[in-house]
Length: 279
Ligand SMILES: NC(=O)c1ccc[n+]([C@@H]2O[C@H](COP(=O)([O-])OP(=O)(O)OC[C@H]3O[C@@H](n4cnc5c(N)ncnc54)[C@H](O)[C@@H]3O)[C@@H](O)[C@H]2O)c1
Image (cartoon, rainbow, N blue to C red; front, side):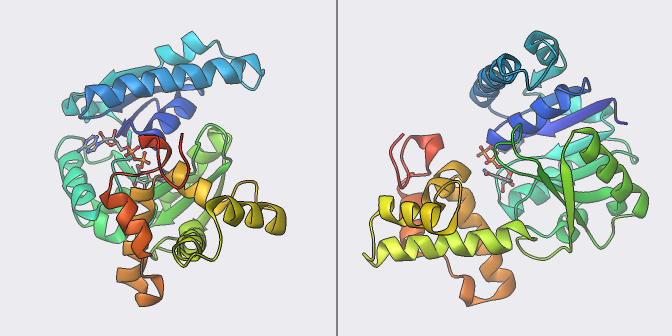
């Protein structure tokens, strides 16, 4: 198994991914450009570990787990990693730039994975030398609680890289599914159009925010409504995913204007305190 892993991007996903790796006693570096993001990530991980420990979901002491995580704003620390998991925002140009940077910093046998929700791994792999070591490792939010990881093979991914990532996922006590490298893979190809449709139902005045979510919880047995889920994911991330689906699959996937409006206003969901609901 890997002994040194880097997670790049300490937002809601990166912090959760670093946490579950540290819980397995693997040394992990959580790297972000923003010192504020690193500070928030550290607090979030501490709170989550304390809760999991109190509920006896983890047996390792939270302080021991925390000692496995190095928080850093220095990109160069990634150089000795056996695996780098990229979790920067869902923007293809940014991810291509970051992939190129990773490739010129690590050695040729470092596996480079992306937590992208929708972007082509085959295109990201083109930004690195030795593209056969690239694959998608798509964790779900919140990472410490959600069982699933989607594993996506780029056209270039070798069998041995794919196998190592499958084994790593199982080692983290997660379950994986495999998807072809198509926009949105499995989960977001199905989920995002539904969330987008819920926003259309709101925009057209068909029902209130509360009733849309109540309808889907009580009528379809969903654990949370689509608008609350959009707030949890981040409306900026939802919009970016819809744009990737539209670009790759056609105008059936056009993002709802109300979703675009909220993102433009900085109303991004839970992370900004206001989305479809107030927090
Ligand atoms: N939010 C979700 O529910 C969810 C679920 C699954 C996958 N994802 C995917 O995970 C990725 C991250 O999403 P998130 O919700 O954690 O975003 P986020 O906005 O919470 O965090 C992104 C972090 O990346 C940092 N960052 C930006 N540029 C960077 C760079 N060049 N180097 C290092 N750090 C950088 C930012 O400072 C920020 O802290 C996206 O690709 C997203 O699609 C998100």
